[in-house]
Length: 149
Image (cartoon, rainbow, N blue to C red; front, side, top):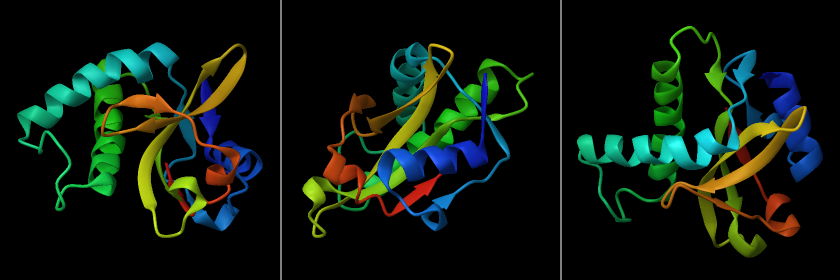
């Protein structure tokens, strides 16, 4: 199953009230993975890859939320390509920046993914410092000011 870049923009505008100009799409189409791959298979690979390259095991000022989000995004693309070299699309994992509790003094970078759900797709949010699914309140979704897939 695939999702187009235009569909990603439309879903983020609809689901999160983000302005389409704040969504950056690198590819025309993306592979939509299963919930299991995003929340179980990939995290194991992610932690091993971070350890292998010597990334800090815990948050430090020079390796904070945006660095974890960048690494999660890049490593998801690499892991997806290694999993099935015949796939022509990148995986529908992106990174977003928003304000925690809608407080503009608390910017935070996390990841999001479109995963298979029934006959369509579902948008989920992921904290890259734990590689686990999180929930954003509607007021937090409304503060997303950057998204990149």
